[in-house]
Length: 251
Image 1 (cartoon, rainbow, N blue to C red):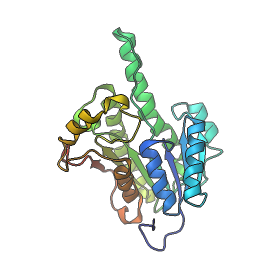
Image 2: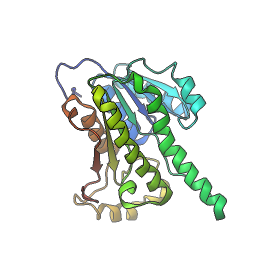
Image 3: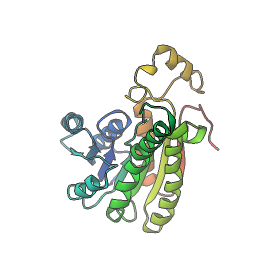
Image 4: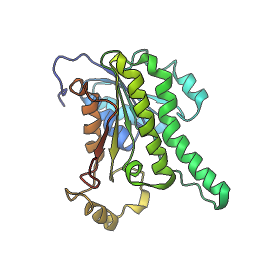
């Protein structure tokens, strides 16, 4: 895959949640374009296998770093292994909390889990490496969800919190020439997010809600992320780019 811009030096890219799904597809796009990529996530074996496979296909430019990004102690320890300069940071780590239980304790577990898995995983790392973001060209791209715009209980609320945070982050880092944007996907098949719920009948139903007649693929979201991370997107910041095939129109 050719680089989407000409004459640019190799960049250092950090992708959280890079072992599977959307994050892995994002990492692959950057690695294929010649960038040096670090994938970060909780599952060491999954990350190691992904880095080896992506690196073998793309000249060995992919490395893995296991870290629970919702744990400040682990984030602090990971700083020693993260690059001193980061050209692109992609916050793609996240999941839905499936904690069982009823009553206030069940509600607390669900809401706290979604907040930790989706908000803290982005905020703790980004705030910890903001001084490493390359001036006059650094990029922060955070992957959220259509649920943040349409409603989705504790999960949607957590993703919506990232939208508000991104606005502040863009204002703070803009004077340094660093842009901060959101990609909000709709239904994306080929990930572990939906589990067995996304059967053929559900895929057909969800495809019917779009304007293009299909659900998304991880590569669709990766393409949006790569664009926002490119030099050509240097005048776009604080934005939410919907990537949902027209399932929910932008506003």
